[in-house]
Image (cartoon, rainbow, N blue to C red):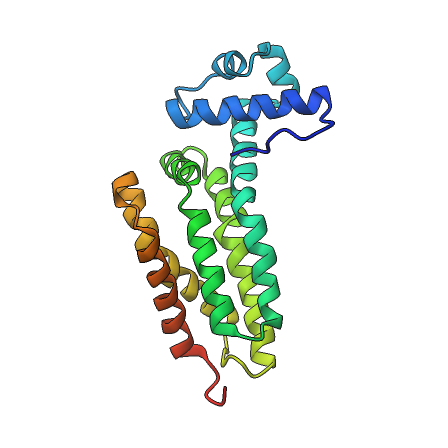
Length: 214
């Protein structure tokens, strides 16, 4: 899920993208230990020296894959979460956000990468930290900021915005993500089930945090 080709892409940028795409495939298919820079170079159709010119070592390359893959899902969600502070229909907007966030997090490539990062967490804890900070950590922090502003507007009764944001994230993600992480594609809920789950998570959250005068 690294960035795709764009019109007018420079030769260097094209090679950079090819390396990321080949490396993503290799890491997800072979695991971290089973992937070498030689394998990445062969998959990208470039020399190993070219790979090292763009990425100093395998850990740096894997870190960039984590960053770029998570960003494809996290960046649009981040913008939408930030806009919640100005919501005119909080339940509808939260539900819409929740459904899109679930769809993004349950993308197969992101789930496979999550499994790989967890598998390598003991050897490379910085990769787990990067995944968290760029993904759920960033979303929770932005949610907390929006919740604080919604509380100022009298729409939410929130004393601890960060806790409330983490609770909504857990309500939304825990069931579907744990299920798919453990069961693979067989555990993926149907779209209608995800819709129902998103609505239920938001209703539960608002039952606890909606301002009593709203």
